[in-house]
Length: 253
Image (cartoon, rainbow, N blue to C red):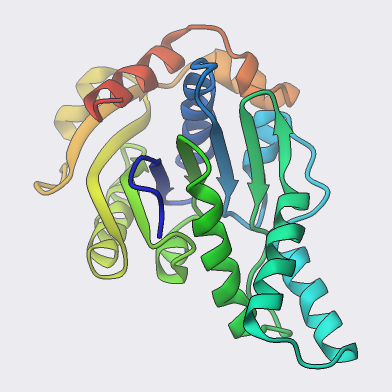
């Protein structure tokens, strides 16, 4: 069970709409609170959030899963509590920590060697881990797989990210409908990204049941950071950061 005091953001959307950049900027804003502890979880197999934050990943949760599978083949059957203890140790070892920020990459949790009982235990451990932090940001995999997989079943804020395209809006509509059945969350909101101008909002068929929390005008500064591979944690207080900061204030953060 996640600590009720922990504020958890699950950031989801169609591929290519900039949800990883939004996740990184949310992380940047939250770590400004030096007294707060932040956990950023990259739930995308591509591990794009690590690049956006300038973090080197040496071990993922999936690496831990595979190690446990291999050990289970060579050792006597272990009880559930022993497996949980081993997982806790290994996952803490997989954390990358810098000041008040900790980072964890999920990796690719499904493959030919799937060990479903261990996957279930891993989710329990991640939930337990989250309770040690004040804020958790989950950068979800593109589409609805993150929601279906229930990497984190209970979150505070479901943050849906879309560009102005009808495809992007359709995907967040689908994610929202699936999340209503598969997740527990306190609030859902939409951040529109990569708009050319504020007036584009009037052309978009926005969902009635998803509140628009903010919008981001496409800018060259972020594009330059992406091209150069620079950490978004170094992004100055420009329009991108101000826009996400305003969206967070609409979430009462």
